[in-house]
Amino acid sequence: MTEFIPPAKPIIGDEEREAVDRVMRSGMVAQGPEVAAFEQEFSAHFVSGRPVVAVNSGTSGLHLGLLAAGVGPGDEVIVPSFTFAATGNAVALTGATPVFVDIEPETFTLDPAAVDAAITDKTKGILPVHLYGHPARMRELGEISAARGVALYEDAAQAHGASLDGQPVGTFGEWAMFSLYPTKNMTSGEGGMVSTVDEAFARRVKLLRNQGMERQYENEVVGFNTRMTDIHAAIGRVQLTKVDGWTKTRQENAAFLNANLQGVVIPPVAEGAQHVYHQYTIRVLEDRDGFVKALKDEYNVGSGVYYPIPNHRLPSLAPYAPGLDLPETERAASQVISLPVHPSLSQGDLDRIVAAVNALAQAGA
Image 1 (cartoon, one colour):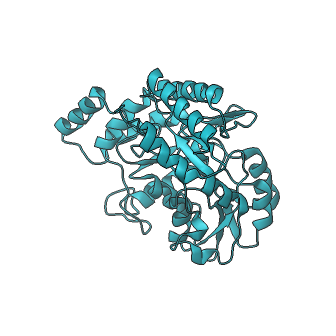
Image 2 (tube, helix red, strand yellow; image 1 turned 90 degrees about the vertical axis):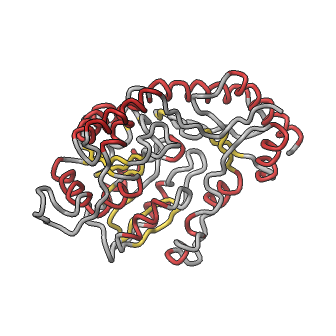
Image 3 (cartoon, one colour; image 1 turned 30 degrees about the horizontal axis):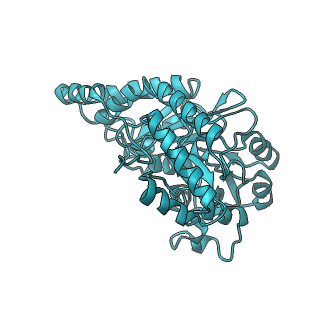
């Protein structure tokens, strides 16, 4: 039997383990100098020096970003339904209402026309997701934001290093969140980063992550304990030195798949967009689920289906969207498959993925 090709494979090496040991030996394992250094290095690397705040997860980053922006009960925030539930969850956790709108079929990201149509006098902000590593339509969304007087945020959980017209994601909105979960393009073991528009906004996020205090026992606001540890930051700092190489390999792997796959819809890249291929997501127009099963059973090739149930139909979030019809979201949810594209793939792995997909597409799975 051929070896299984996993859909994702976190890369943790000796340097990461040595960094953790260094922190453990120091005795400073909670939020400390490693976190501060990681924030500075992440800022310079990904968001053109914008202030960033490290937190214990991407979801915490979304939640604190929204709260720091003043989102709360009575507000609406426009979000995609075709994404992980954390985006809508974070809005709901503030007491605001997530308003789900449709995606455009090419990039799987928010359709600007649908966003514009969904704005009401309660709309506080627009929260696009740079899904699968492809930037959302930030030019158009920025124009809508300015014209309609609503804020623009960013969920960049899957998009470290992605850009649009040379501008990095995480620098378009009032704030942005990056996830550092193990399956992302880089990891800190667990964690997130909030990129902010200025130091005043960053300070609000820092207060919220640390029980509402900047100085011990001088609590200014009601806050949380969502700090990143120095252990996690040390892992992230090492990963930060490697992520560009991994992204280049992802892009090369994607280029090979683009050139050789047949009978499926490969992921297009919008003009001016830099895709970092957190996922390489194709569309299978007939019997997607059978296709996924055959890939595993017949060729031992793993894949992922992200996301089979749109947010507006989840039991947790459906009450916010009674009777909502999002046709492009539903179509994508029934057709997408994410193939392995991670940096650990060998040329033999890529050849097997291509052979498997093309054979199944030709046979109609």
